[in-house]
Image 1 (cartoon, rainbow, N blue to C red):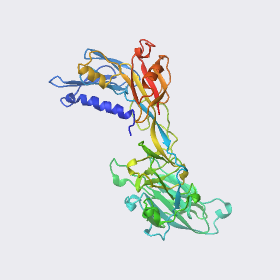
Image 2: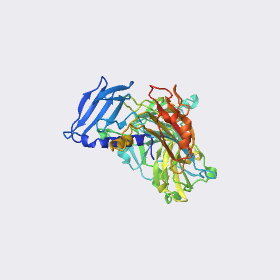
Image 3: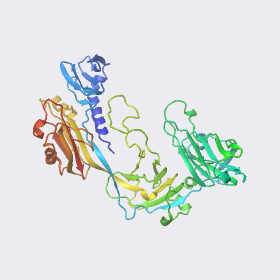
Image 4: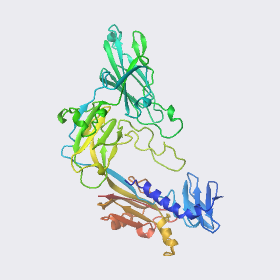
Length: 519
């Protein structure tokens, strides 16, 4: 699954560095200042082999620098690579690879998926493989990766004289956990959910709970979603309900539940029965499609489907679900957490300047992941077995199988932008004049370009999917791409004023931006 333009831009970078290899491995670099924010790092061997990297550290302004009796234009926050210390073949801020806008097209079945369901009850003390002890245990050292799930269960006795029965103000249950997610069940009913974050996996559940006179059963389902795999002191990382756990609002005030007897069960009943496999699924009675309800916690869903024709990549759209796991033909395709919405501030993206994980955020307010890849190599022509386990409650009828297809392709190429192909032609002696770059577009196999959504040679603005004309625009921009690209799977157009009917604005650095629809 090529992710353009990242894949193409990195491929060009690797090729450019490979051209520099003889010089890079022969000598340490010398650093030559070229300005206040500019420098050259030059690798030169005693045999005369030379490669240079020209850097502009200014995040706002272009720079023109003199190096080796020549002048070079460096975009803001960029590095130009010169494998012969003369000719630029690559600049980090000039992307020659095309971009692509993808679309996820639902695979149409007659009635969608026909689901059956099995509701898993909260664990009970009398279940198999439970153990009891005083106090709370750490999750990772209890489950030893046998399961993501660990049940914490205890009894709470409530006297009929408690004041909340008359006031209607239910007591508040407070649970402190080291992470990473927690579902709280009281007398078999889901009372609430809490989860931590990447920065701080610890969580606190605090909510009023509906207790009755007599013995109440509290079951806490703690979920671990992985541990860091880098950094020191792995032994200090922990998860699970470490306490305190307390009830507030009783006649006695606050009751600490942390050090009373707790029973524990590792994993879920469905995991023990291997409900995700075809053989294991026959061990329980499933509810038929007409009785399947949505928004049910701790529910297993199963269905079968036929593999769609074609060779496009496939995925499951899980946006209607909340949190759980997915299996196809017994293979896990991953854990989903559509109910966890991405936070942060999304806006325009500018990669100039030092990078951090909060930079260039996208899809704020949406699920951190919506589509889950289904390898075609795991599918049979017919009768593929799909199982979903939902923790919180979701709508299985919103799950769809989709094809990943290219919707449109874009190019954004500057005049005189360096390219490896042009340099290799000149270095070989086949061409003895400067060569202009080209805008390359290519749809997927089986697709052709059906229309030109946008084209402008001049000073266009925006990014792929939202290009717009700038103050300078060649009026024949569309004509060129209509002529060379419509009906073709791929096409190339030289970025020269002559190709677009003349120079629309002399003495201005121009570029071409184009978006073509693939169908």
